[in-house]
Image (tube, rainbow, N blue to C red):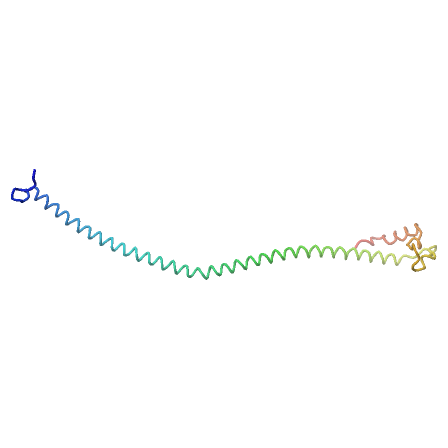
Length: 168
């Protein structure tokens, strides 16, 4: 089977098929050029969009840099402030404890002052008499028992502690 006549011309049906295929090829080439044009145009828009994204990203990064630095400074200041607050909290607790101790000591001293005043206002009984060692400074073994006997000391303490004298 040959597709050509002996003189080299194609058969009639082959010639028609060749013509049809040539026209189809021409049409496909036109479609390809159109698609290539569309693709070229689309690719150009994609390149423009990528350039715009790159520009906007760089612009955003430039704007973020000062904000990042400012945020870092703010974070450092916040950490320092938190440390100061913790220090002040500890100091406040320490000062409160010390203040409570001072208040307790003041109350104790007020009570002692009241007791001392009560003691100094107690009238000595007629039978109280200092023995020689109580009236001699530097005498060995001096103590309160050299001035009062036990019943007199009890009477004096009962007087000093009477009427809520230890309450402040």
